[in-house]
Length: 278
Length: 319
Image (tube, rainbow over all chains, first blue to last red; front, side, top):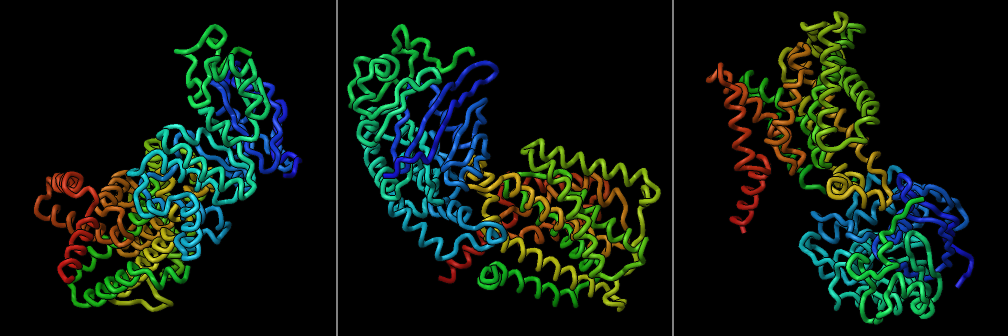
């Protein structure tokens, strides 16, 4: 594994009208590294992902991808450069079939300039889509309308659409949220297995500590917009701050981390609304 | 792109229908030919609206381009004396494309009711300019001389009808090829989920802009051809908001299922309004309104959905 960072985040800060959502974020991600992003709801994980992928513009700081400054880049340009993402709520085309979703994703990623006027359902594109669908266990749903499919299948499709352009960095926002417990591991096996093969660097937001322990090389733990721990999972999940503010002292790796601090919070965690005054 | 053109069944059947129409027109009375011409010309503008509709956008101001095409033809003749069909059509395409391109920069940032109302506002500004400016013919407009074909002045309207059919056929084939392309497929994708389109790497604003310009050109062509068919342009029958309303009406009546639908809808509307005015001169709007209600309640997919149903039933019947 090459240790030079493919993604470097330096002093990243984001505030909304004086409310701090992320501050002093410094992260290096190496090529092929799988990084888990954990934290209670509102800790700043999605803001972090959104800033890297251009959905939100940082208030200050710098994001570099392969040595190039991509701070505040438009989402589509981030995709062109090789930084792609999936979403917490699957962003797929509900009225189309799985194959049509994949074809649009693939044709848009391949057809540039006037070649975008070529037929979108060319045999070579269909063949390539079928290969990807087979890798992501989507073949059996090929011709079904997405609105009729389960959350798990939609999540897989969302991720499959994000990888068609062969990104160098993939950011997954809660890839297993809304997915039944028996589907979580098969989905992550498929996704992480495929991404490891292609050497893609992955940052994924996750609440399920069992998944974090099993799949990631490194953990970034967020609390009130800051990274409170950056370490391998075995170390991070034993970190007192992580136990205190993220997973809870009664943490059982088989159980998900606290989803919301509102009901379970003890004294320090009550502050964990994810926002604070600058 | 070429392969879509030759392999697409819609284009084949559409060609056959237009050819049959061209032959049938040789034997049809003038009043029917006139209605068909008006219907097809409106159908061109509706084809443009359909393209926007598939993207989830409704323009309540497409009479703007209908008028621009028509006035382009009239003003070209007024200032240069040009009556040749090809130059007239090129003029209609260029002026509508330029205006569509410029306004597209503003409209591409709006959606839903804001897009609809902003497009209406632009058409009303155009209407106001035409009504007030003597140099543009004011409320009376201009007359348009008979169209010539490389210097030949045909005695009947058949040559113009044939040209109209060829333009409709070419436009529909172009839109069909476009809809089958990666960019064309983004119409439904944008309607479904703009965020995903952006994250796939394509600018939604650019895609909407391209569709808007194509749509403007289609309406401009329709306007130019109706000016030639009518021999007259004036603000009320070309640019008024009621014309935009008619175009939206025909779009709903036609359905967005096929590129042929707008022409069928256009022709049906032409006959519907003719008969309504003939038999109920003081309440023709009632007939039009009742028809629209009937379509919305009983045929929400428009006339095309009915044709599709009958076609499928026929296929099943013949095994």
